[in-house]
Image (cartoon, rainbow, N blue to C red; front, side, top):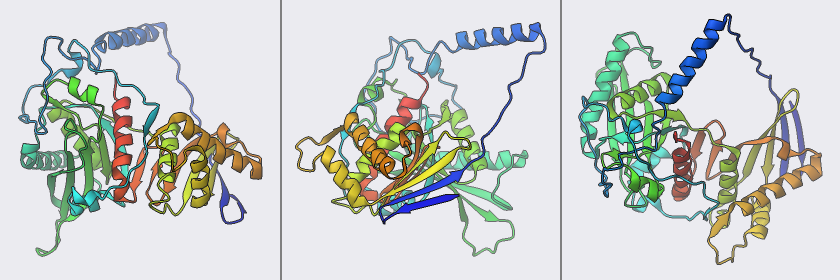
Length: 395
């Protein structure tokens, strides 16, 4: 590891990483090759009904925030239906981060569950007949499902448990528009077999589904029996995450996928959080790049928050009447940080990939891991992540 520092505002850390290697396989006969391409052809033909399809003759109505379905209901075939949902577009501008005392409209106990933990992100396609009025029933069904899977030999990495208790609860107040469905929080507790009667169950897994400032045109174009909670955040053993996802897919006819955060998203967070410094001390701005060298290098770059804000203010003045930020301003800010780094170390960070950004307001990693550090700006973060989840879904 190479560590280089200059003054109190800039720090450089090089961490060599091994380069992963892989070798591709080969078809051993022409018959394998023929069957392979036949399978690909059939797969493509089967997938022609895309995730944006919906019946053309079906009326689209304004939906309530409570939706429902029996746990034994037939699948919806949402992805095979004709017609089209609204096409999502990547925005070139967005509003500046606004501070709000979120605990004025959201239960502080609920907010405490979301803040400080590290969350792994996934996207989830629309849920068929999900109802907020049936959360208690869902708690019982998921609990029974996890116990049944464990009895069948599915590994659950939480120790010797006599059983699991699952709790679904609605986090009211995070929704920003009438079309946003209310956030749903899920908690799994377990109690060891030999625990004393008075011992409290231990929380072994948490997760939540949310939609904050979701694209209005898209949400209104969904069939009325679907609800979109596209952002799924989890914290706990991967084995339990897999079981929870499996249950959702069986019951609500949905699909999950990993939600990685690209460098553009991290650039947006860097600019949005830096702009908050005058009203909420961000304490530090830490950025990490991955450089495609041999061996690959990780560069950690820590910037004094006041210096970062002065650079941002020179691009988007605080006294500006325009409360929106465009992508050109964001890119200019990142270019300025990279240019400052180059002047000192003669290294082009632009040749690499931004993989992590961290401030006192939160952190985000390209692998799809986030941490919420301050609830006053949670709406800004969740709005951006909701957008990422909707854009990531199959089209």
